[in-house]
Amino acid sequence: MDYDAARSRAQEAETGLRLSEPVSLASLQRHLERLRDRKIVINPIEGPTDKVCGLWFGLDHMDLILHARAASEVHRQQIILHEFAHMILRHEQDTVSAEYAGTFFPDLDPERVVKALKRTDFLDELEVTAELLADRLAARIRSSQDRSGGQPGNFSSVFG
Image 1 (tube, rainbow, N blue to C red):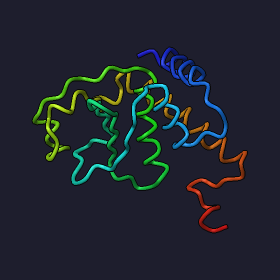
Image 2: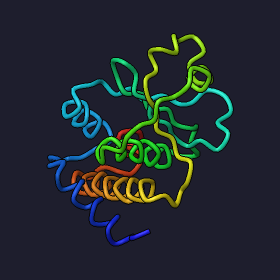
Image 3: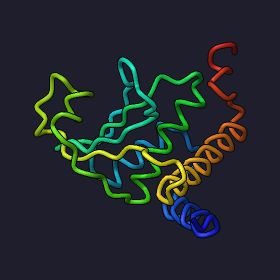
């Protein structure tokens, strides 16, 4: 595993996005929807997750990110940013079986679930690069909040 190469790919990918300030999770989602010309829907995983933090499903008409219930908003954001990073880095999804799709979508025709990407090895080069890019995106979001006077977790809008 070449960590320097992974860091360079993450930096190049972030630069290539040409994000305009301020950057937030919502603005990043809208930016990716425009670039990909597809809607991105983000939902928590209902029920037990069995070691799965996040999943990216390519449906026939949209991208769906499912995330495990997180202990904090920052953790939830990191899971989602990791899945966004896979999209940005153009990591290929695998075709999923109808049985696997049925685990997460019992009421959906399995034919509509086309592909999925899920973590299987945390030390895999694709996963490391995606996590490095997710870290860079999280830093951009924090930096935008600092410049705009915002508080992590949106405390300012809640407490004034």
